[in-house]
Image (cartoon, rainbow, N blue to C red; front, top):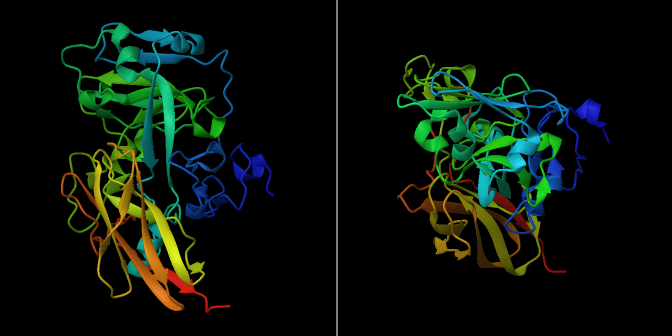
Length: 357
């Protein structure tokens, strides 16, 4: 097993829980190792742009400043724990999830992390509402955007003031009941519900409030849809990505191997800021069948689903299509974009069913 220094991350990476897409910084959850609604910390996916920083919490400070506040404010780690705490269950997904499958469908290899299906996870996030952190600085009447900045270097991405002030936008201190691990943003990170993972900046050291729209590499050159059909927007080379579209996940290896007979096929579906409305499944050329949605069915959080299948020996393809409560549904194909983002097409999941013993 590679050492943390060789991997660029701190927590142990077990191959029976997580897959390595090859960057040395990023690790994805194995879909067949999801035990419940929440993703355990030992298998929650990691997306890093640089090695995980080891931050001295005693000297760490969080500064709130910018031309959108009346007076800058600085917090210590202890200060944040003294503020009112709240907890929410929310899903985070990297915009590049399923990039390798997008490449396979497009007949090309995209640059960037070659994610399979596991750059997604759900946790109970505990911290302070971001609006409560910003309020003592006095948000000005002309404030437009809020931008957390990470201490890892490149991590920074603006959001509209309204999103920053939402009930479920948090400055996170703990995850699944435990203090944040270094790989997941210790001592503090942002949670921006329903948006791409890059918006939930880790290792936050500064939050800028601005009277104008902010342009940084993460909303002009990267985490942007670039290509035919995606015209440049302002200073951006294309269309900046914010919300994550509806998609589904089957809790089986790829390809999968099953015994013949009655099987319960399980999975997850997620729809960004929306709620999942329905999930339908189809085996080979058979009819689409409604899967059962397991509670809770909440906004900005994945939903577990399941359906029964009488598996017969041979080679099969399972297709799953999720639909959200705003009418969004998974397409059969996704238009190409230069960086291979937001691939949410219906997938043909290969399954081999053994002959009877």
